[in-house]
Image (cartoon, rainbow, N blue to C red; front, top):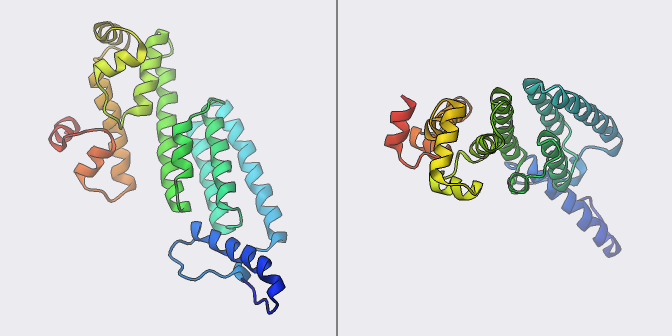
Amino acid sequence: SENHPSPENIPMAFIEAYKALQQRFYSPREKILFYGTLPKAQDNKAVLSKISQCVIKLKECIALKSHYQCKDRIEEIFTLLRESPFLSTEEVYKLFSGILFLLNELDTCFEEMTHISDCETLDELHEVFGQILSRNMLTCLVMERYKNCSFLVKKILNYVNSNYDKDLTLSGLAEQMNVSPNYISRIFKDEVGKTLFNYINEVRVEHAKKLMHQQELKIYEIGEKVGFNSSVHFNIVFN
């Protein structure tokens, strides 16, 4: 905090120290954070205006289903936050939970919102939100490609694209969709033109390719992140 010689100013010093501590979200490597170095209030209005403009443009991109432009607008927001780190952690969480709400076309996704609020740094949030965005983009593209499929098959496609990194079994999907495993296998193959598990492997491989470009992970770590329980199985499918 600032230097406060009087004991009466202890509450003010506490508030200032807390605001300085919030900067650890933006600068996790800094060991000492000073209240006096925080962005000034008068500078924040201009940045808030720019963020608001990005969100407006993002809404337009979502309406037009311009997925790559959506990604560009979100990257702009992250850049603005790094350049002017004045929003509190809670405000950043609310901002990206709101963006998630827009991306999901006003459909709430509590699991992904939890992933956002669990992030301890802006860099971690950037990575997590990038994964959410990639998953969302892939789901939208898949829904467009298979728009003539039945409601059940669309529901299965959406579920697979949202949960590819989890343990997906035919019996589990059948229970989730409240139909028999045999029926799922037959209708999925008839409408999509490939078996359900071939499709699941394709989705996992696509996400694995993106992780190889974005992160320095070992092959088996990438396999685990996209839902393959066996590195041998991942190597066979990937190759």
